[in-house]
Amino acid sequence: MAIMAVQDLHVRVGDSLVLRGVDFQLSPGQIHALMGPNGSGKTTLALALAGHPAYEVVRGRATLDGYDLLSLPPHARARAGLFVAFQRPAEVEGVRLREFLRLACAERGKGFCEFQRAFPQALARLRMEEFADRELNVGFSGGEQKRGELLQLYLLQPRVAILDEPDSGVDVDSLKLIAEVIEEMAERGTAVLLITHYPRLLEYLPLAEVFVLLDGRIVERGGPELARAVGKEGFEVIRR
Image (cartoon, rainbow, N blue to C red; front, side, top):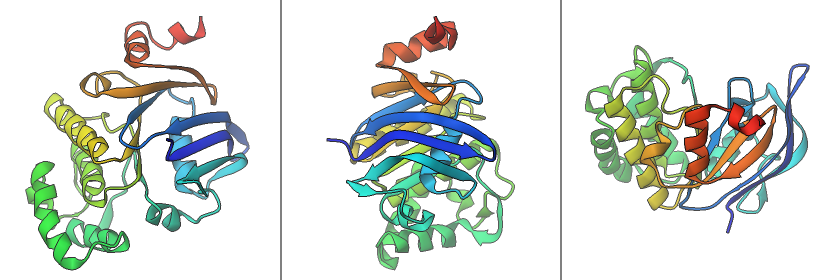
């Protein structure tokens, strides 16, 4: 049974209609992949579902656990269980990673004592022990930023996770770690939508379904073999 359903989603950014009728469903405990070339609308989809004010939904529906997601402000979408890992996380000076995550966990109903137990375990899992008291993303490399986003996912345990290119700018060892954590979160029941250009991360994951987004629409659906075909022949394999 689907936990998130998106139907006929149209999204405008400025004067441009970027998404032109996107439909998909996500199921608990399953990993779905969204692939597409630059400019196809992948990040637009993630930010529109997160509630970014620059991304205007002009038509369509999105539900989470049967409730209207699009009627909620961004913070209420997060409280309802939607997590979005950003492609380029912002640097936040003066806010330490520990305090940021303590407050975020409190919003998800986790008490201080529970956080004190879980935080060191999460740091160790993501190999980020030395980052606990660093300012959020300040001075982090690209790979460190991506692990920081996964650290948030690991602690918050959302109902739905949309991960925008968690494989960009990371080395092979970090790629394998990221894949392990994503699979672990799915095993805990999170529905995952993994956004990527390339199939390299997908090779490490048990995929339930692959979507290909072109020109603002999902034009192809399939299993892992679809991701392999795109990796071998590029997105032209879909256009033929």
